Length: 444
Image (cartoon, rainbow, N blue to C red; front, side, top):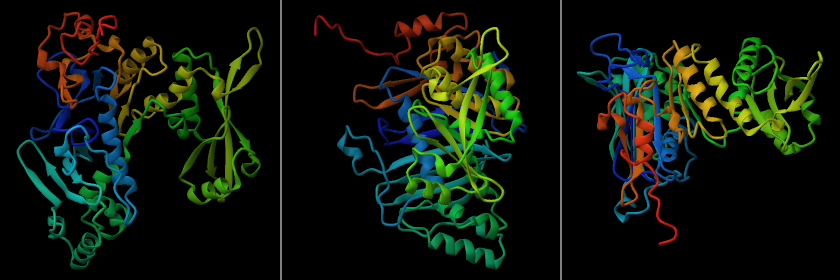
């Protein structure tokens, strides 16, 4: 779970800004809070909603999280620059490193992990186990200094040597956390729980952008009848007109739209645990996977629609469905997996291509059915979510740009509006900021 996130000098963020999932003093909707299990622990919210005008920086916040996640899980190439996007509208930020920090809950512990970097190198990196009253350093990295490794102090001598070798071999442009993942720390170092738990948390950070297409649907496979039934049920709940979805087997080698060199790359990249989702034309979508015998298999997505007054079904390509239905294929797996694992789901522009009622219903289902410790964070323009009868003030965040074009964030709780106030109307009137500053077209 996410406790708090800060970013500095990235895209439209110049000075450091903070987004927090820590509950405020709100007393309503206590079921929206995942409570701490001990006095030293930290409670967190299940839901975060970010509002703001177009180009205010809502998506940039999500992009900054995505950049950090990709740098951790994918790493860098030797002698290649880090693809950094600093704040460009003030010269003082041109030589200043960008900074990212996540405070998270993972496997029963709380951690603060972060790093700063420029295009050439990782400038600083740190991991602490934290509580309300204390912090314990796991490792830290500072400019022109060896990586500090208190984690190695209680280890066997050969393991000390291994992790110190790992630290010494970490490239200037590579995160130490990434190096631990790539060098299989889990298999070679017994005192590794903190580092491995943090790496696992970033794998459970699921980010969906407005132009995502069918990323979520890769959960489907021919053996997963539970998901197939769940998907069909949700498609019915959201009134899509689809009566079922299936994967049709096709010979991978005979899929005509995929060039041979791409087929060879897919075949070499995937294994029995990996699924490739391929768009091969404006109409056809395929899932490529290996079976237990190592053979590459192709499955084409098909939706079924019942023919009126008949027992038969008409089959459609997914691309024949509406944009809103296609968007749901990315979102429904979130609902299916809510109580199967602890994830942080982040959806940029959740309302993209969706009717307002579908957006509201999706969030309602998330809050109602989530019993595991999962969180949902969304950006949106859908003002129907601005309802203090259904949501908490500390769940709603407002995003706007200052006169110097830097993005700032603030919680609705800072304004202390009454729960019965017409928040939607007040927001559209500009009482809280974070709306477009429209100019008179005729007089300009």
